[in-house]
Amino acid sequence: MRVGGRAIARVLAIARALDGVVLDTGGRVGADAMGRGPDGRDVLAGRATVVEAFRTRRGVPVVGWGGVLTPAERAILARRVEHEAGTVVVVA
Image (cartoon, rainbow, N blue to C red; front, side, top):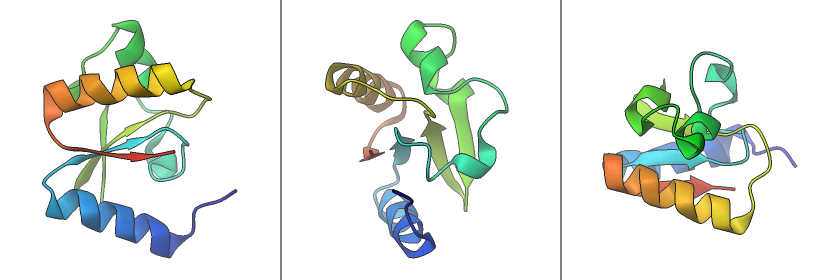
């Protein structure tokens, strides 16, 4: 299923209002920035920090993940992003 532009705009607005980071575990919000540098896979594997994995979309930091995560992996990654960057808005 594809997330529409309006839904992406809402997610970004929520993250901006919370001064937070979007954790995009479905690869939809940060799709235009994927493929350039480390992403959530690298953070989970310990090869990169959360800040190194940031991509910006409309001024909001996004940590992307293009693959499939188990619920446990999603929780671990969300905690790591929260620990390093603050408030997290998770998009699955």
